[in-house]
Amino acid sequence: MLPADEFQHWTRRFWWLLAGVAMFRVVYVFTCIDFQIGGEEPYQWDWGRRLDWCYYSKPPMIGWLMAALRTVFGYEWWALRLAAIALGSCTLFFMFALGRRMFDARTGFFTALMFVCTPANMAGNFLFSIDSPLAVCWMAALWFFWCAVEAPHRWSTWGALTLAIGLGTLTKQMMLVFPGLMLAFAALVTSQRVLLKRPLFWMTLAGGLLFLSPLLWWNARHDGVTFSHMKEHFRHGEEGLGGIVEQVLRFPILQSVMYSPITWVVLVGGLWWCWRHWKTAGDRERFLFLFSAPALLVFQAMAFRQYINENWPAVYYLSAFVLGAGHALSKPRMEVWMRRGIKLGACMVAFVYLALPLVHVMGLTGHKKLDPALPMRGWEESGKRIGELLAKVPRPDQTFVLVLDHRNYASQMAFHLPQHPTVYRWTRDGRVESQYEVWPNASDKVGWDAFVIYPDSENDNFKKKNLATPIRRAFRSTEKLADVEVPIGRDSKRSFQVFLCKDMKHWPKTSAEEGIVNDSDDDQP
Image (cartoon, rainbow, N blue to C red; front, top):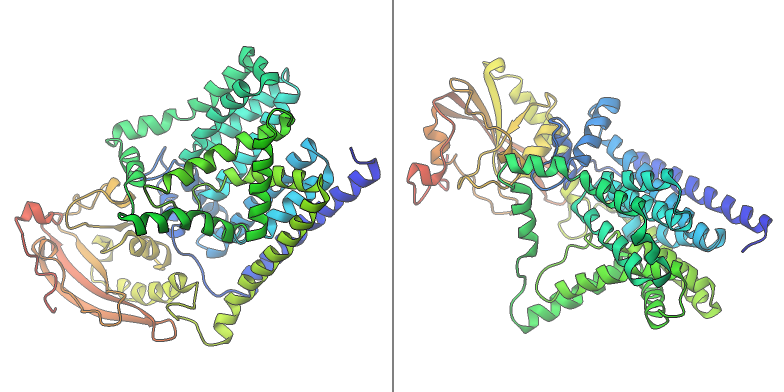
């Protein structure tokens, strides 16, 4: 235990760290970067316009949060950045609080500092992804579970833990692992087997899992589409010895880069030490180990058969940071390496912070290899120019917007068109590939016109294509309104063809329904 003055000293240092990092990130968002939203952000933003109990690929929490942001801030891209920073700050607080409670305030401070100095944490505090609220729920659950372990008779603590697990379950399916790890801790740690005899323990598990009910109910009404999507994550990856070796090595290499190489070694070292000294380790070390190492090993094993997304194991590193800091600070030699890891991580994070504005200063904006923000550029201008065409359609009250190709185009248009219309999507083969196919299509709009946005290929030598035969057959007439090209630097551009299809006879049929073998998509318009 630290003396009272030391406790206050490290606690103050943490608050200064938290406030300084959050303030810097807010200033950076408004002054040093010129991209807006991309990736999953506009797609999940569109979920927030139609609240539901579940969505195609994820539970409802991210859609609910997007709806709340739109209600408070309107259609502002920076609201997503502020939300990511706020949630990241909450995660840091719980990491510090857990480290302080388990070890001391100094450990809590270095836990937070190590995590701040990682590229993974930087990315998580700028991109408002589903992992942002999940990390908060996971860390809150860790905190409340440890508090319950120390004071098992407090109803309020178990109630808070139930809520954390439940909200996490409504955030991402990964949270369902948490109750299993609680059982593993209670069963494998001899001194904690008394938890298995406590009704509050089992009530918490049951209460947390009850939050699955709306997800199960929604999927029962939608042919289990979320579970079908989840199965796609477990398909086989590379074949052949070379491909498998690359796949297996890729996972730890990328993880070490995301969490800073030396810091990652410190984390793995802490887990390895706990495994080697399981019998003599304390309950706190076993607790942190069980909520980290087993899952990380499972992901490494999965890498033998499939591709592993970099963010999948993210929450299992959170307890590893607490254990890594506690282990390193108890051994002078390990503390040296921990501090080196922090310095290297800080340099890596600083490089990324500088790289984004330097891309613009050095004239590399739009470079397909050197501009990391390329997927997020050009959408606002594209939406503005296409929106001008939409504003001129002859029957605005009887015209719906249809966006072809990948769902990202549909969601970007939904966000960036000034009219913020309800956007529809049509797939040639009729498969359910996104939330847009789960929502009702525009089949009830017979007699309406369709404002069709057709993105061109992103290749330099793209070929402008005509509309698919089923779309042309579904309308009385079709005319091309314009080609919209938005330069985004370095010969990169966003290109769209815009059509007006008049008087819909029926919703476009799939190619199979039309009996088409060779669609005439590749004809010049």
